[in-house]
Length: 239
Image 1 (cartoon, helix red, strand yellow):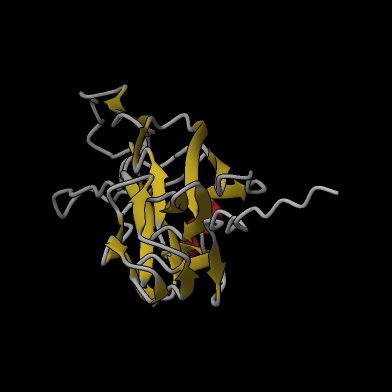
Image 2: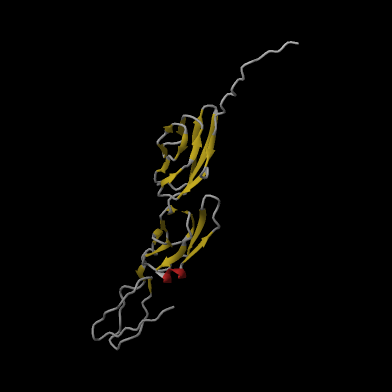
């Protein structure tokens, strides 16, 4: 009978990270600070995927840890995502970070110079908020029609602007405005008038001593007045 005695070996410690807080954080466009809470079995380190995400402190010893997750302001027009990695020995875990975009309303282009014949003009309207469209002045609806399409996944819409023919000699202007709470954008529209026309067919008329009546054809798209001496009476008629 043989009996042997061996010294009992202690098991190798297992690296671990146990989160007490959520591992998914969301921020509005202004950013801010939130606390991550976890327990590490040993010394831990961290890294982030982008410069707009930081952890403080970025490393620590074993036990409970509560580093502050800081996100800077998002001044862009697109939401963004990133992450922070916590590592303790062979153990590694990821904290996801998402941030919304800054509220915005924009148009492109923001101005149209239109000939007197009118026409159809496309424009792009972009927004990540609900917007209201309005004509200024409202009476411009007599010569401007604006059809706003549905927004795509990026918040872009196509606006089709139809401008009617301007039969007047005077130019005219209007704005299509897009407004939301504290935000606005506008498209300016300026339309030329008709070219001025003025012609007189008969410029010299010989009248007998007894007097007479005669017509002087005048072609114009202008507002005109006629002045005569006291012995001549003029009457205006329109065709």
